[in-house]
Amino acid sequence: MKGKIKPLLPSLREKKRYLAYEVISNSRFNDAVSVNKAIYDAANVFLGNLGMAKAGIIPINDKWNDKTQRGIIRVSNKHVDELKASLIFVKNIQGKDAMVKSVGASGILKKALNKYLNPAQ
Image 1 (cartoon, rainbow, N blue to C red):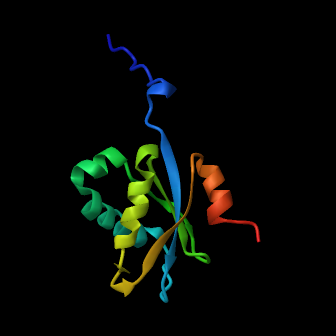
Image 2: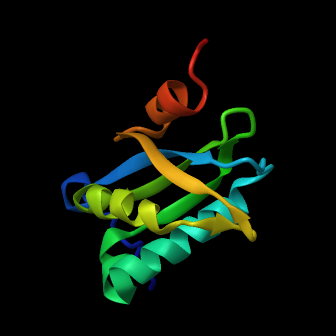
């Protein structure tokens, strides 16, 4: 007889933050996949494999704003500052010169989307 696995209690789950970032470049990027890969690679160089595992960095590829060139990455609440620091090391994306800067962080994805990604003009 197979038993159902009990879900993890909310108090035991890893707390997360959603970091909004903006790409500053003369080139335009149509999707977040290449941008998130560049950020992920820069974070891997800065934090190393163990740091990446602890930080729990998860790029959210479908949350991307073409007009403002902004996107969102999920990270553990204890490692937000390390992810912000690793954004400095993104020098180019797809061979094009680019910089990435942090715009803000939120504990709720919907709030991060409304406040940073799609702000009401």
